[in-house]
Every structure is written in C-alpha cells, then in structure tokens.
Length: 229
Ligand code: SAM
Image (cartoon, rainbow, N blue to C red; front, side, top):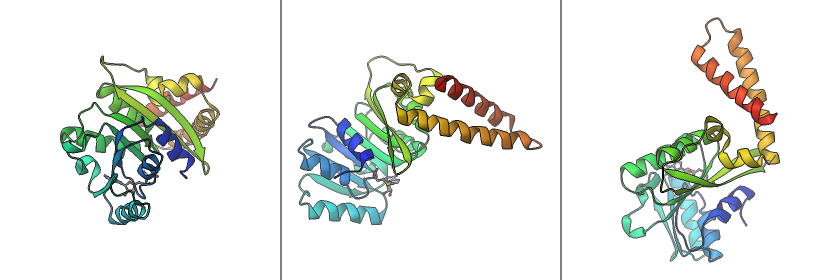
C-alpha cells in the first residue's frame, strides 16, 4: 500500500519499464511496481546508509531481490549501461536537488536524455521545468495531490523530437495544471500568494531592499493574481 503521493508516481510509470528509482528510501515504489507486475526490474538507489539499509531490508523481506537491485551511491552514479534503464523516478526531494542529480547524470552519461522522467519535487517545480526544456523534454502529464496538509506536484516528461518552448506562466504553474486548475492547484497558489504578499510587505519595509528580488516577487505575484482571477 503506497502513500497517495507515491501512488500517483506509480500510476505514471509505463507498463514493462526498466526503472531507476533514485532516493528510494524504503524502496516502496519499486517494490509495489514489481509486485503488481507492472515492471520487470528496477534499481533502487540511495546515497545515505540508513535509507539504503531500509531499502535492502524491504526488498529482502518481500523476496524481491531478483528483480530489484538496491545500490548505494550518489544520484544516477549507481547505474551502468547494462541496466538498460528507460524510466527514472525521483520523488520527495527539492527541485534543485532533482535537477542537479539529472544534470550530473547527463554529464556522466549515466542517462542519455531518452529516458522517461517522472519527478515529484517538494519545492521549486519551476527548476525542474527549466531543466526539461533545456534538455528537449516534453511534459506529458502533471498531477497535484494533497497529503498530510502538504501539496505535491508530479511531472511526467518524455523526450521530444523538436525543441519546445513554454511561457513564463507555463514554467511556473505547469502547462497542464494551468489548463486544468484542479482544486489543490488553486489552494496551493492562494497560499503562495499570501506567503509572497507577506514577504513583499516585509521587504518593502526594509531600508535597502534587494531590488532584483523585489521585482521577481512582484512579477510572480502578478502572474499568480492573473491565474487565480
Ligand atoms: N523517494 C521516496 C519517497 O518519495 O517517498 C523517499 C523520499 S526521501 C524524503 C528522500 C531520499 O532521497 C532520502 O532517503 C535521501 O537519502 C535520498 N537522497 C538525497 N539525495 C540523494 C542523492 N544525491 N542520491 C541518492 N539519494 C539521495
């Protein structure tokens, strides 16, 4: 049984994928997918000893060690070409960390840019979308879920034949979420609006506010107002 958030990630994985789940912690996601026979085989990668041990225990206790390789290492460094990975999931980390893991993986040829990516950043979704555009990915699915009073976005992207551009608004809010505007999306951006308004009011009170930051904040607030109206 997966959390609502991880269930969304699982549902977006294609049937028969060869999966790398990076930052897998207990390896709940690959275990679920293999047990459901939705996928054949997976790598569960972890950089921290504790979570790595958790993953190993989980996989052993469910007798899935033939189908899930649990590996200790930084990001995508745990992969080798013979793994023939075609799908990468990274969930439950900040957007900047996810982006740096993917970038490093590209540089070190651990991934080729042809893999399906399913990403669930806890914050900074925009950073992820910037990365996707720069690497000629197309966003094909976006979902937003609320769990334990937190709101999470899940983004699925596939390599595209032609370079894509997204507008400022699409990069910030997500091209698909922006169209659908689900309940959790409205809730998230109302709360972001309040947060930003507060930060802005505090900054405006300061003697020497950072003009660049002020402008960015004002621009973002304008976009939020537009989207919510
Ligand atoms: N993916 C699971 C989920 O979504 O429920 C676990 C999320 S947990 C909050 C984040 C995990 O990512 C931690 O176990 C942490 O050790 C791992 N992690 C952080 N940086 C990593 C990196 N560079 N490479 C591999 N794992 C990393």
